[in-house]
Length: 249
Image 1 (cartoon, helix red, strand yellow):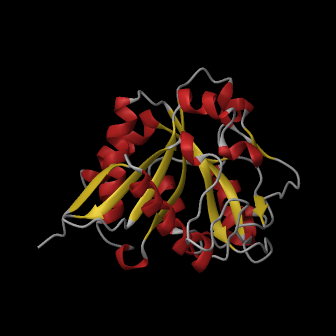
Image 2 (cartoon, rainbow, N blue to C red; image 1 turned 90 degrees about the vertical axis):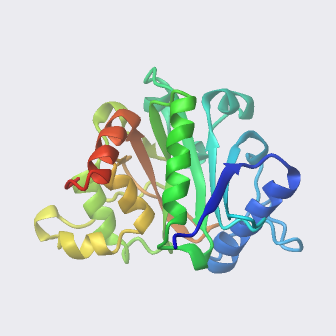
């Protein structure tokens, strides 16, 4: 029997803290990250942007345990925050001047016991409803590779640059210290092996028509190498319908 879940936006301080506690388990304990506002005593991963975001949480039906999180910053909340989280790593001017309604996504994670199962599909379905409700046209946000050694990540970064670079009008660029992603010549790249090294969340975005900005950003606080993912929701809807129909996307 398929497991049932409850997916909702966090409405109370307790629900937000449960989301931050899961983030602590994943981003701090598993990945070795840190930050100025991380509360190690209470085991909460948080930052100054949290009060402005909508926090989508998923829990097993009948349970208060948060096993998955997505945080989302719509345009009005971004104005209140003064900037997007991603702006510390990428120049977002191409997106800001696109005339499209933006939504920044971030801090996506699942409890280790729920990875590879149905929980992520439920989160994505709820995200799709949120996108329609808020009339979102472009999704974006940083996604991470574990580790800061870009030489070790040369193959997947090169594949993203050569095969999934954003069109020029949406091509955000990493801030200094800028890390070029075209490390390996495309003719010398083993694309199949490189794809296997790309994290599953990034691959899911690519299947839905996602693309990446120019350059990577090394985030030593979180022990990650970040890329900026961008998705046009019109293309995402077309790809998603084909995937659900069992077609090759």
